[in-house]
Length: 238
Ligand code: ADP
Ligand code: MG
Image 1 (cartoon, rainbow, N blue to C red):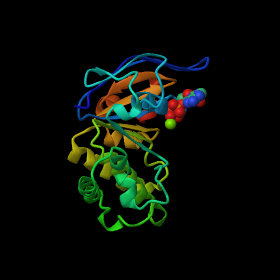
Image 2 (cartoon, rainbow, N blue to C red; image 1 turned 30 degrees about the vertical axis):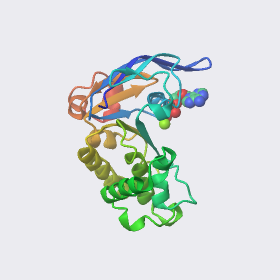
Image 3 (spheres, rainbow, N blue to C red; image 1 turned 45 degrees about the horizontal axis):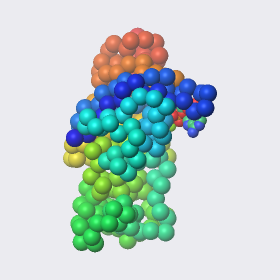
Image 4 (cartoon, helix red, strand yellow; image 1 turned 90 degrees about the horizontal axis):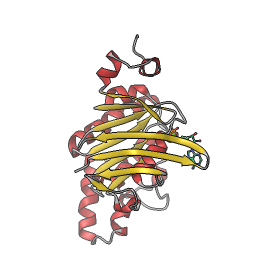
């Protein structure tokens, strides 16, 4: 569960080619980081996987099943955004519970799942608060809680920490890594921050202008970058 394959994925917006062609295999429970400069296509690629954008051509397979034409809600994935996208008028409980209510789950089951997620994310004491009464880090945890309760096959994170200050980013990085450890679920994490990539990833995918420059473990990219772009981006001494 949680194996993702991109097969000749190609994406254009009008006459602009954003993703010329990408082939990629992501294993179950892998923590994969898409890294690259602003505008290189990271968010587009994530949105294609989520189904928030349609591929122009090519296929997206999840656990061997062709999901290319499947609606986002039917793909079994949870996405977490930089902007949190919380409902300001709802409590933390309400925000985390929202996808379960939408799915028609009964009250007792919702209560249990929300409390489990809150425990994992240290939000138990904040369930009655509104998002406006929380710190940035707590808000991002609520957004992650809302993703967790759906028990997705994979989590998709789009620069989830870029609104936080440097100190908080460091601790949230650790929290997300711990979460990966606890949940044992595939995670795809988009960032333009090479420190995040190097410290969190099992596998880094370096993107440049919609192409994959290199795929490898942090150590592989550091020791043997295939070109100057990767070397420059990863900050190795080549
Ligand atoms: P990143 O997340 O790496 O910063 P994006 O995936 O957001 O990059 O964008 C990649 C390229 O695709 C950019 O040149 C951007 O302007 C373009 N792009 C993204 N979304 C759209 C859209 N809906 N319509 C037209 N162009 C888009
Ligand atoms: Mg982006």
